[in-house]
Image (cartoon, rainbow, N blue to C red; front, side, top):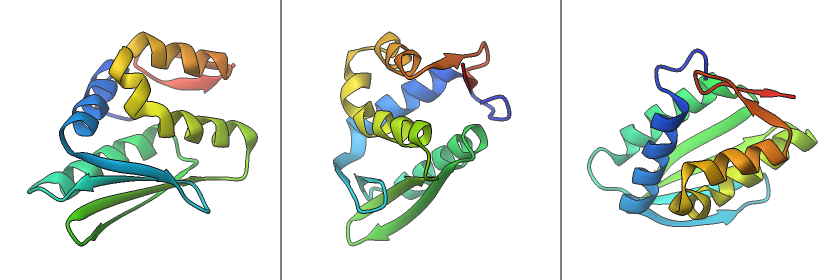
Length: 125
C-alpha cells in the first residue's frame, strides 16, 4: 500500500463499510472470486476507486468491474502462484473476517507469512 493514498486501517474500514452497506453476495468463479453489490448511485465508482487503490498495493490482482442488471460485479483473479491464490482466498473471506475486527484480518495474513508494514504495506516474509 505504499503508493496508495490510504492506510491499512482506512482501507479495511472502507471494505467493512462497502460490505455492510451494499454487498449482495459473493461466489467463487472458475478464474477467481466475485463480489456482487447493489448498483445504488455511486457504488460503481466506489468499487472502481477501491479496486484501483488495491491494484496499487498488489499488482498481481486482475480486476474486472461491470454493471449487470441492478448489481455492480467485481471479479478478482490472480496470477498462478500459491501465495497469490492464498491472498485471494483471504479476500473472499473479508466480508466475514471484517465483521469481527481488523486484528483478525491481520492475523490471517500473518499466518500466510505476510508482514504488514507501517503504512499498511504488505510484503512477503
